[in-house]
Image (cartoon, rainbow, N blue to C red; front, top):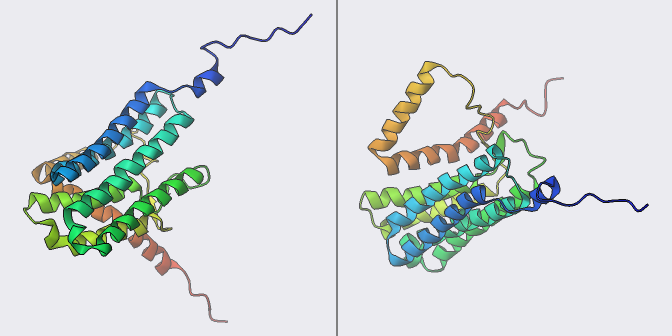
Length: 254
């Protein structure tokens, strides 16, 4: 009697893993839209909306992975789609927004700085995808692309909010692009915050600190957010210097 093979149904786990889930990819698509919207607004000269759109994309990017894990809807498609979305929102968009806002008068140097940032984001995402299974989950290798985008876009947002023209701070904007691009592909480690357990009880003062943080952000949102990501971008280098200072000299007393 021939062997009867089980029918492949919609409840087959193997088929479910191959599917495309709507909920997490909806957040990814929204983040991609924000990145594209930022580019369009920069072309129209509305740089403040462009900068805000990049920050919104960063929030949405942080939600899609968590939603996928909570709803058990992770997929290979979602991971690839997320990387492509990140490249637009945190690679191309910040580079083009900053270039159009501040660097057009710098000529070749301006677009080279924008390209350094853009290629740094591409290499950062490619390295992250290929080393995902072997790296320490508590740390990122190199500055994460959303944080780099927030650093660059945050500077533009602060200057626009204070009424400072882009051409007046073009050298600072150029430096930030190059710094962020190089830091993304560096070996400097950054804390990932992935080991924080939100279900665990915390002291009362932690809640007070969170409330104060919301108050500070509400008082001057552009400055608070930009300052936060400046501190984060420098924290990796500070930790690297601390580790170097703790190392014993190579040659000791005999």
